[in-house]
Length: 219
Image 1 (cartoon, rainbow, N blue to C red):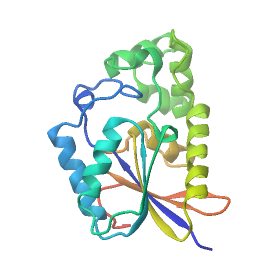
Image 2 (image 1 turned 135 degrees about the vertical axis):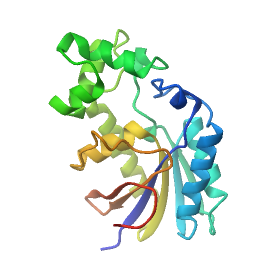
Image 3 (image 1 turned 30 degrees about the vertical axis):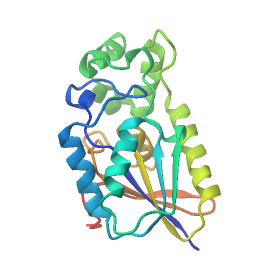
């Protein structure tokens, strides 16, 4: 059966990343290091022939996308942007210090870090507790994130004809949520800036076949 092979790239490091701030739907520019990470991702992918490039509509993803495209031997025929592939929304906690945020989220329940929550109860529980502790009630749950993901995947199915290679530029916690939904444990394996994961989309299924790699080597 013909498949769509989606090469998923996390954007390069941003200013807020470098300050360890919560960065979901809020945005910031790539740092010089982040630009180099995007360029390196493009070099890793340069020999692939992409039919379509899809990105989150947030600036850091689009900036990464354009730097990757500059490295490719073949330019995709189609370019799409979608809110479905945005980072997780952190609500009231957007832009705040990450360690302080997770202490505030977890402390009423006996946890001090995000890792403590995930180790004990899993990533969906971390998302649930943030939603509960968010005064604005805007922080997304895992269910909301995965619903966006499934909508985005359906959009790719609707707009692309298999067999084809698709480039998707998106965000770290978003990719992590996808990995956990595919049974990959990410507690000590958070998506690196510029890393590549590969998703195989068929008619009724979408499975992650490679996660968080800095090369196309499958080993």
